[in-house]
Image (cartoon, rainbow, N blue to C red; front, side, top):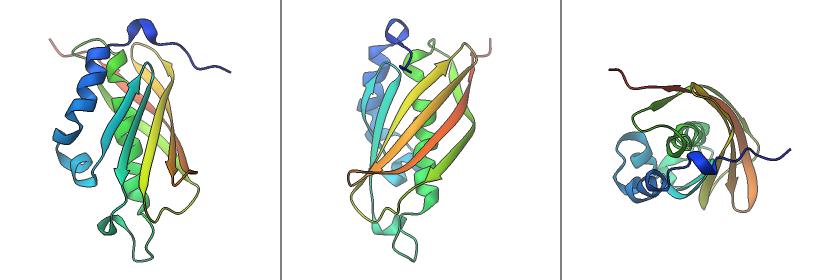
Length: 147
């Protein structure tokens, strides 16, 4: 089954601003070192460096870090496809952690599976050192701005 095409609703300017703003996003994404590195119609890729302070006492990346990365890209992938002024909020997501992460770069690729005016379903593949470390799928609620 092929992914839906989002070419006609894709705002390249919004996509480029997400890449440019990666260094200035505050809060948890900044602390984790998340950088959005590529955005195409319906797809977004973000990376974060695995650092010692993000590891568990067993020297594996904490599952909460991987979850936070997934939550971040789950919403971000939708913005270049939404109408200006709309906002997106994660409604739910599920994650399967498939392999331990101990070093290198963690990369999450979010792909919009389905999108309506009020919600989107997104799949996220998380890779590390050339292997699949996790997969997630979630739902984003899309809302119009309040008058």
